[in-house]
Length: 302
Image (cartoon, rainbow, N blue to C red; front, side):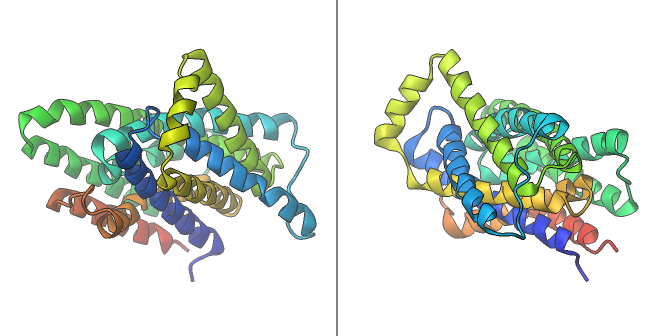
């Protein structure tokens, strides 16, 4: 029987997948200069903040506040490195490549997570995890083959988007490990998720302010805020919280590898909700199925 931790991890993957589909639609509708990062983070933060009074009112859902020391430090690191920097690059990759291909490239993040979790946390690397990672890498190889079959004029764009996507995957892989360390240091899932997203949002605002982009961004969103970006933020908040919950129940390397199932859900949701933005191909469909098969292998771990 599948454990609650595995089910929660898969639910997190579904929530993240929905957020990427909504993000892609919002990008197409309003062409946001920041790829939609600011409204997604702000919406996620506001939604997570509503869970604070709910948690305080429930005796069975302690928030773990005040967080301090090691737990607070690593929750902040996960927010800056994984949620802010990782997403900034990932959202740019989605804008350049589309939701399906951008998220499949993000599937490299479990590789970084498994290596770092093994090195620093002692998480075991079973044959199921290894086979699942091989499936993820195989899916990325299929997209590389698809790129070679395209006209030459498309290759430079894909190469640029691929580099951005792989960089995002590495940063998010590091962020996953920091999330696990924060939880093992005494942070609760809700408290750690709130700190993670809050720090990411503050880092985003500070970064855009230092770059001189904050004012133009706010003026853009005052008249061109797509409701799809708000929906992406709400789905993203659910994905973050469910990730923290699952990482508190099972090894983070397992959670991260299950998160590689996101391309399957992104492909299905994209082709159902926004088929004009995501044109399926044999390569991308096969890549999504390969990742799905790898996820099935992992989800049946004892």
